[in-house]
Structures are given as C-alpha cells and as structure tokens.
Image 1: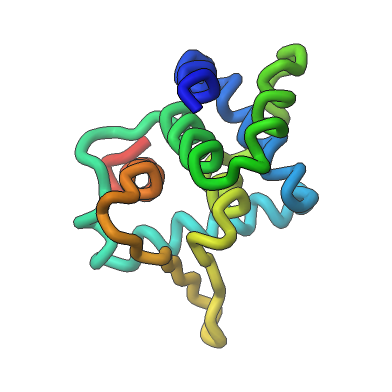
Image 2 (image 1 turned 90 degrees about the vertical axis):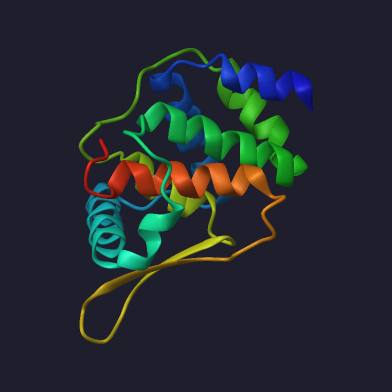
Length: 157
C-alpha cells in the first residue's frame, strides 16, 4: 500500500483533483455539470448552516488538492478494488481539470464517499450533511472529513 500512498502524495493539486474525478466517475457516472453545481451549492449550504460540524474541521485553510489527495488515500486504503482504477487514472496523460466552475472538489468527495457521507435535501428544501462516525482509529476518513469541513466552513478556501 505504501507505493500507492506515496504516488498519491506526490500528485499536484490539479492532478489529484483530476484523478479523484476519474475515480468517482468510474464508481458511478458523474452527473451533468448543472447537477454537480447543485450538489456543490447544497454541500456549501449544509456545511455552513450546521454549527455542530465545526468541531470536526481541521484548523486553517484547506487546499482543494489536499482534500482530493486525502480522499484518494482513504479510497486506496479502504477500497482495494479501486487501487487499479486510481493507478490507471494517475497514469493517464495530464489533460487538466475539466471546467473548474462545474467540477468541484466537494461534490467529487461526496460522490466518491457515497457510503460514508450523505448530502440530502429535506422537504423544506434545506440541505443536510451527515457522515458515518467511525472509531477515531480510522484516521484516513477523519482527515478527509476535517479537510472537507475546513474547505467549506467560514474561513476556509
């Protein structure tokens, strides 16, 4: 596992976002750009209105590339079936990140971690964010969640 871990850590921010996009797209086709924008908007709304989540945020400003790398590390550690997909995505020639306005890291994280996080809209139209709480020994998921929150809570990115 050290090889893939080191390889992911060596990715630039743009590369890690592209690899995360390719990995999320492999798991389930990515929605169209309008749906991605809605998911991103909902994530921002959910995370900024739920004050209980602030205690999970990593201090400081999060970098989208760090968030993408942490998500890839988590996926590689917990989903060995995705390691070949991640490796293949890393080996693809750099073609840059798709339209940065429509391709958001937060939306990609939510899509990639569908079994761990839920972003839903209630009957009143308000977005809510929930994540499965695991024992703290699952530091990879804790890293992803704390970076995600730091990216979207006030004072983040």
